[in-house]
Image (cartoon, rainbow, N blue to C red; front, side):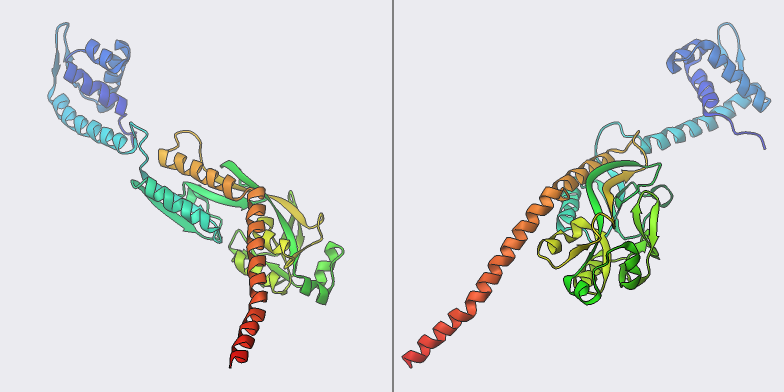
Length: 338
């Protein structure tokens, strides 16, 4: 099967017909006159038909040329419409935007999404929340929020926070089962496991780089909140992002297990397939999520919020402890009056 005609040949032919001169057609297209002549000759040769009769003073369309021009004009108009449908001549933020994020994000993230949607009403925003690790190119996503010890090659990554995966357990669990002194001791403990890439039950815990250790799991879930809750309720040892368990560590509901031995650096980043020709809606969303992450996921910000939460909780506990005695005093006064 012969190759289809090139758009450049159609364009040279149509522009020559409309300008009625090779020189004017070349000037309007910004190419040498010889280029126009070469494209016309190649077009006639491929079609096996004379399209133009050229004299020193004029160009005359043949019957074949008139028929081709009508169809060529339709093709060129369609190409122009197709180009205009995706090319933006301004920086207006509009169009489709598909985003993949993990579940279990703080309320401030959802507030940021709502603020973005309100600010850019012409963006058709799709937010897919799942523990599954999507393939941005294959699955058609523009942006993803990732927390990982190793980000995939071939993607642009904007780091927004650093974290560590640490092993934790409740004091009650460790009192009942003992504190592991080495990694080998984990063979005698209940391990609470996640899902690898959000799809398959984990069989290994990461140790940094490409190193891992095999672990026998007692409970498996792709829900991070359930893993945190299970560890806090004394069901076993879990390996969790530190930023998710800071409040529990601060108040002693969880303690770190094998510190310095069973922990690994992790990165929270926004990732996307390419940097050049990034659509405006993708660019502004990346900036929005980076700003949110640096404000909300910074270690100092997390520590400050934890301290505030602990202070508030202490205040509530004090008030609760004072309430019964106050109630008893009021009851005693009512009894005395009677």
